[in-house]
Length: 425
Image 1 (cartoon, rainbow, N blue to C red):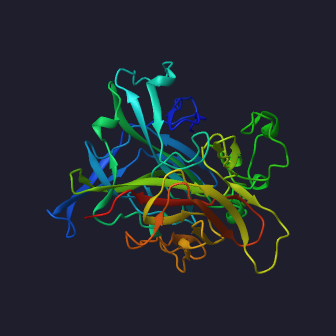
Image 2 (cartoon, rainbow, N blue to C red; image 1 turned 120 degrees about the vertical axis):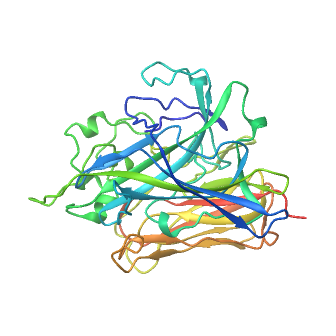
């Protein structure tokens, strides 16, 4: 799990804890090279597939794992895409109706090169700290650069040429430190669950919680969690379990996250894009001239979520809305949303009401992994003409995430946009 962070852009990272599962046995598989036809000179796009360390799961089990120092392209590079999916010990894709990928987040951090690799040793806050994206959420919430959930297989992260996400720039790495990456993931095995849907929503009444759960669990304000908390990431902590159908028998198996990265070596022909992750729970307020953001948050997972109340009914969707001022703007290159099953769509609007991007869901119709019937299998992506949509410095954007108007817990409304400060000449 990821411990709370400070609110600064360069955030102290005390994420080493007994609760974290560390893995440095990442396997490099299937290296390949492809080529882009856009740039001059020819842009060599490299691609590699990696696999995290494996972990065991059985029917109804929940796993929340953090893998530090994962395999990642070395040197000064431009990332073109980062995609991931769940696989079993043979490398087969696992269908979502068996094991549900709730989320995965790829997070950058800088680590002191003199820091001991022994996780049992006490580490100072300055030994390692997050380098988060440009998003607006408070307190280090949503610090990652890439990350989706059950929709991962059908949501592309590809960035068009000549744009890329710049990483490994030596001028931006403090002397005595090195740039590293970690993956934070949450997986729910729904085999044998009494209610698969409730299980994937982390509904507390569908989990085998410890008897003292509400007495010992603290919320983000360090207050004891009350029984009014009906569901969300607090009820999907590592090693908890969904309530099972009586008598159900199922095998245990090893599970890993397989991820594929494409990149180019950085050169003068690349144009950097900045990653912004916005959230529909962001309650913006001001303290004098200072803008404050308050995204609803789970303190363990550093991600924003909310509950859709019961009794909404009707055909109109439930709308979660945030008005988010952008200190810095740019040209919109890419846009999409991370949401959960039951999503209707998510739309980002400009201050003048113009639609910047609408991300719509695709639901499965079959049994094979990536097309599971009734499951969210992808979110659409916006690729506007690079010069057609410009977000201005100080512009207030409106984000609306829409779900079916029925009770659900653990709803998310994250919106990813990549902005370029300049365009190709």
